[in-house]
Length: 498
Image 1 (cartoon, helix red, strand yellow):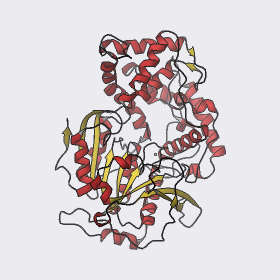
Image 2 (cartoon, one colour):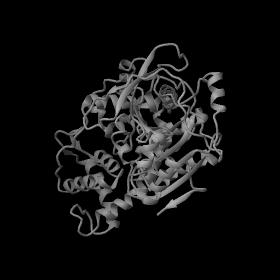
Image 3 (cartoon, rainbow, N blue to C red):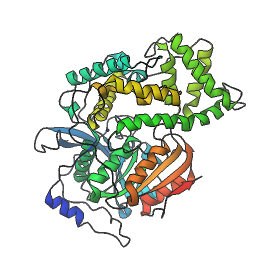
Image 4 (cartoon, rainbow, N blue to C red):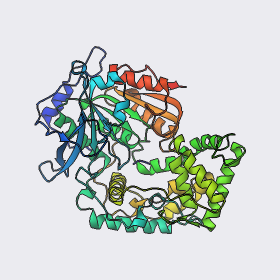
């Protein structure tokens, strides 16, 4: 999942006038981005290996609390690879990461290399580590190792549907974040991320900024475009979150119900294909009951799994592995191998996990974003009812998408209401969406498309996986997005790429 935040302390009257007075081209779309006077950033070498030698890094200081712009600041690490053809330069293309908890700091050297030449010619590629993410000013909650397990942080209920342990985890993790997270943990949200982006834009000297946001980054991009509509140039939102203005991340968590149902048949066809060395069934129809029966067996009789977290393969660990593996077809063998081993009463080697320090940091950012974005019910009864219904209608996800995340015990009320995404603003947004996406299903993307109205056009791609643009070799979808970034040309209406 990826969850997140918002509001705008109305910049300044002069800045607003500058934005409103920005020139339009003949088609009514925003004209090219122009540099404006701003203190120069101090660009230096980036940390890390395997980076493009042209990538340089700097730090932008932003207010800890945007409501108090002259108070304490935190650093936002940014990176840049300059446009490759200065004469063709249009402006800056911000790569907005997923998450929450993701970073795009090294993306100019990573997925930025996949962009076609005409896009790399036209834009400085900009990455950043959102607030709280190291090497920006970092945040951490100091969680116990057991509470860093994804099968624990994702709220899988007990085998009997009980949510008691989930509520206990919520209380324990929330208390640790309150104890160890400092002031920063209270000031991480999607709306705050959007305001930070506008500070980055100004520090880069750009009147407008283009963006490619993926997954949770689509929500950040949509919130930025809502709060700063006249600071946007060309916005690509890829693998789109439901922008529900009330439930926010609760709606995204619930989206796994649909996402798993959309993708599991694709996995089942692969897992039953003749000649597949990881084949687990003779027909696609056999895969679903086989998986459900195995998960139920592991609920009753977990298998020890030394080195894993937790150190047993239980039903919920299998379900979480299923969820992780459905993010992209290249993950299918991981799930199939685990199923094959578990049916024999064995386990494969324990999966590798990121270094604990990195996991602590990413988890703290994710938890803070989700919980500060909107209030969650505090009563276990509300979750118990929803979980019971979900377990009946969507047995593959066993009630998890309707259960209590950490936010059920979060000690800090949201500082502002979620930003409502509307159709007010320039028509400069292109959505690109796979038909089968476990984390951000097509049904949720259609909600964002409807909310943006005339501001957006959506390209639906007949592909499976999380991440659409330049991810699955769909020439039609890739060509449409690249043309928009390079020339501003969008389809006149929503299209489907087979």
